[in-house]
Image 1: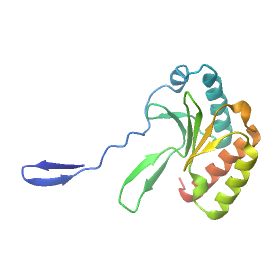
Image 2 (image 1 turned 90 degrees about the horizontal axis):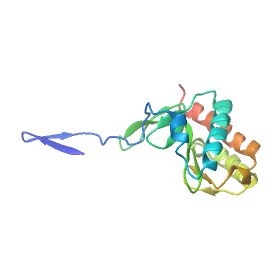
Image 3 (image 1 turned 60 degrees about the vertical axis):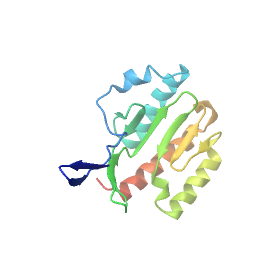
Image 4 (image 1 turned 120 degrees about the vertical axis):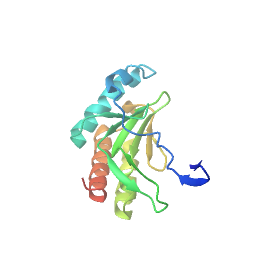
Length: 157
């Protein structure tokens, strides 16, 4: 964003929309629809806690995140994001797993696990699940664990 102040050009960074908030995670979960998403969200929190050792925190209005890391792009843009997280959306559970894109070997292992997971769809760093009943929870846990370990290697705390 570019602002002008008395003929002087001032360049400011656009504010990130997805950042940690003090919103109550459980209060957010109770608003999830359809109602089965509420129980699935609680299952996911249990899985992420067990896998990451972190407590859940709201990131923006709709992401439940675990841990955080700082990033900086070649363009100079920088920010902070959760190391892993999910959002109980109406149509699907969205999981945010960025770590496997760090190395070709990690990507190959993630692809192998996706083949065993069950019904899902993929985005660049997102995993979309219609229902937890349609996936192998042990494989999902391994995907989250692998992601967490890779993020810790790439972005040590």
